[in-house]
Length: 452
Image (cartoon, helix red, strand yellow):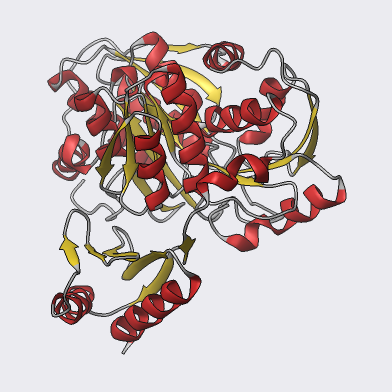
């Protein structure tokens, strides 16, 4: 199958339905994945889960047939969030495949793959090999076809989440949840039925056409319905999930979006109370406040590149108990080092329910800097733009530069990171400073350089 679409990304496979993500292509990936697992001496059963996109069942079925054709078995767990697939992989000790395009628009679908125990598979840890197998073709040997099993795991998933956060004595709370017609509409009712919470649901109907707004809460436009509903119902908290519900964003009682770095700081603080002296990982576009909070609470902070495969690998190497990304991904050692939007939300609810304070009052101590948010610029020569910015700032005194991920420049009261997108001709800029004026000045100067 030499003529295949170029849709293997850094961390997953994602492309347009019917033209790139087709049943034939999905079958070929299932075949190649099984071959890769056999090479890696992984267990001979693959867990397969799917989101609510109309194409997901057919693609998942074709993939399962590809796996079965090699003699390996498949366990279908049906509709699931991505963190539910990670739970199943972790609990059962089996590799897995999740059919989802996460926050992408309706015309896309994709596959997230993992080793047994929810260990990540990215470009550098197997995805390149799987792509090569697909391109070269994987022969089907004459052998018995594997079996396809079915198992319902939603209740087991909920039970496990509720063992990780103590929510038994929280005060009554009113919470608005925007599922964006994504998989949180499937998982959230089962989770919140067990809590002392009144839930105001928004867009819980599973609909892969996303009729209300894109299931991408990192875009402020997609938080507007949630913000209005929080104020209308005088709710204590708002939660927004992406399409496969592995990311969670918060809105406070005033309808204001909460910086994901603030939630990273809150969870880091809680985990360090539970596990004193532990290591916490944060990615390099997180607020400076995160490292400060880690140190203030006796923890060890480790800085990581952006991307789940890097954070999960660093967690495994360091024994870190928690990792947070500015993109809304939160990773937990107790959850097989995998990311779970639901578990992050439960930590926020526990912190809120244990006190009479509002969520904005709880998070205020972590809000120490002014952030630009992530700003994308379309460029024709990303390397040239990065070089120009680096040359401009390297000539200045008292500036530190590093290349852990793209270009990071650190001044005395400000910093910025500029890095290329893995999938698009974009440069992504994040700026933070102690004062709003300094943040705006640095932001505008860098944007002027890369857009000129």
